[in-house]
Image (cartoon, rainbow, N blue to C red):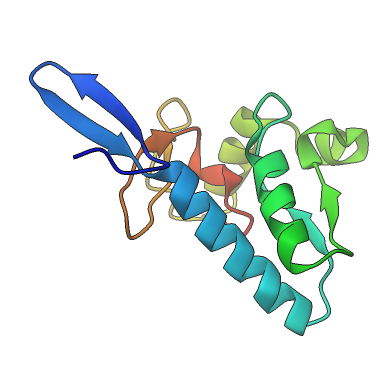
Amino acid sequence: PRQPGARQNPSGALTSINTTPRGRAVTGTMLVAAMKEDGVNIWGDGSTYKGNDIERFYRYGLLTNAELQIYKPWVDTDFIDELGGRHEMSEFMIACGFDYKMSVEKAYSTDSNMLGAPQEAKDLECLNS
């Protein structure tokens, strides 16, 4: 049965449900509510400037906190000048002795939530990495 709001992805004889949009809405809204309680009104994440995830999180967040602002690290030249891109950040973490379990070439993230776990991008998108 088709779930409203979830995209079906056929793969051979099987069909999977893309739960990322639902998870994004629930997670983003809950995080912004918790941030608001702590007086934090700026949303920033590791989404690349090419992606639209940060825009989606921002729109969901505005439903909870009308004063929410957005910070996009991948379009901030000071951020890029200091930290480089994903490759440079991966090398930096390894050089600093962090137990970085994924190689520079294959460091993909999983957008895990209680509804599913599709693979996307790189785990350096997590700001607490």
